[in-house]
Length: 177
Image (cartoon, rainbow, N blue to C red; front, side):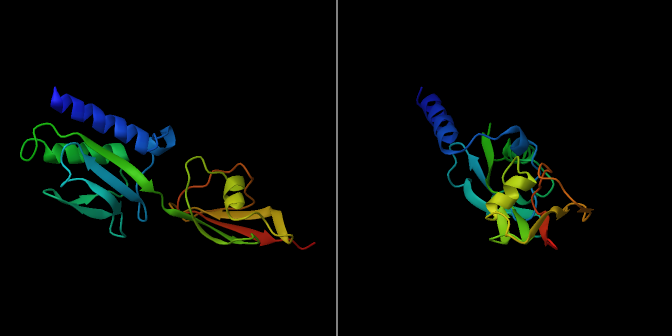
């Protein structure tokens, strides 16, 4: 009865203390600059509160060595860690992988607070500009460009409802009038 109580307590505390992953977050692919946590039920020594995904896309994990995180969803990473620990190290590991911090997106040009900001699921151009303090008096709302992190392609004259992805660079140009 006691192990069941501990399992239920772990699940309840996890649900209360960590935000639920939205559909966007479940499909979110990890990349350089993201931070994750890996929790193993009943194994504090194997649990890691914060792991920064570095430029090589890997991180070190006890007993499993280097694990590639880049390009995987938290769910895929969870299954990989469970599979690696199952059998040789643990009988039936219960693993949770959560995103602690998303990588940055960048807003430059005619905004009040240019710089890098943490990505938020469901981010649009309008929200991204609001996070950067809004536009200045000299901003041209018709001439905003987004450079996509994944492809390096430019989206010229982006509308306010364009989706912004982690790593994207937004440039708000100056108006001539």
